[in-house]
Image (cartoon, rainbow, N blue to C red):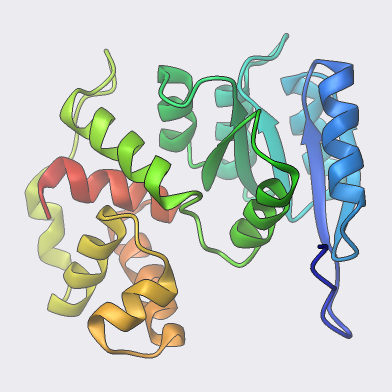
Length: 225
């Protein structure tokens, strides 16, 4: 069952970046089946993805990891650093260094290419709401795996002293992010309004100079928050 678009709400504009034309066509077909999602454009490689993100300014880029000319990790880094859009990465592997690299680059989450259509649509809506942790059970596994055994060349570079800038409440929220909790789950855990959680997340990201809540979750795991 397709989720209806809220009355008066603007559709979520998505740029699909995938080098395999058949896979890209399938993704586009799924996205276009939802009334609250609009396919803003299609890219067949990383360079085109960055160029179209600059031109079209979508809300979200659905980014394949392994693409020609410019890989998805590098493309993600450019899109996020320029503030062009949120990025949801696609991969055929649930735990590979490319996925972790994309999260490090500022991606808001990741999906496996064999994800069911309804889950893909739900993930797009989740990222568009600013909820970066996709499929919590899988994400928790990914965060824990790479925090415990950093990928070569991407080891912990954070001084625990950076946490001194956070208030007690912000530390509690960061801890919850490290457990893969959504804003709603954090609100329930800490007995606060969901809007207040969003404010705390935004502030701690700014203080820690992080690009996404997923980066905050990885940091929380690395520092044992």
